Amino acid sequence: MLPKNMGNMLKQAQKMQQQMTKIQEELGEKEVAAQAGGGMVEAVVNGKGEMLRLKLEPEVVDPEDVEMLTDLVVAAVNEAQRRAQEMMQEEMGKLTGGMNIPGLFG
Image 1: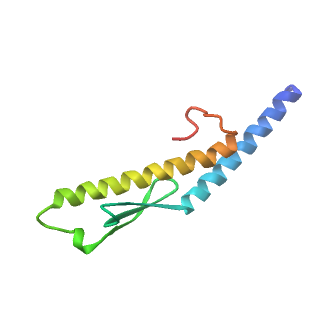
Image 2: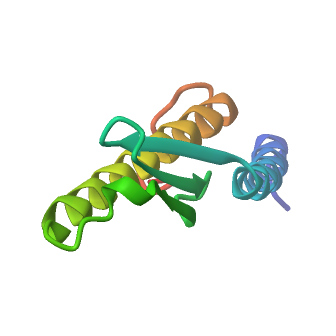
Image 3: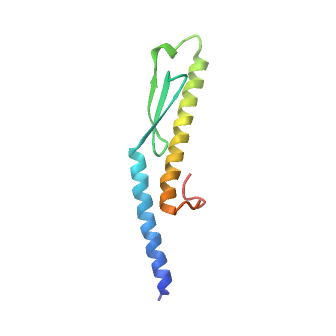
């Protein structure tokens, strides 16, 4: 038989796991956008950091300067993913009371 405190700890851990699953599902539905090149390139990712859309303004597509376009795309995607990571940490921080639990996220 488990001590009373151990039973409560297991219930709390189970509840926390359920809340984490719910937060992860909600994050998958949220979107974060970031722009580069003065808004010429926009990347949209979900709260899990998965890219959903990439928008390019026609004037940024220059066959003579593919390298610049590539740099702008990378910058926009990286910034959107960084913002998604921050959003995930903020949401998970609400669950953990701000404690940084190694391996829990990120």
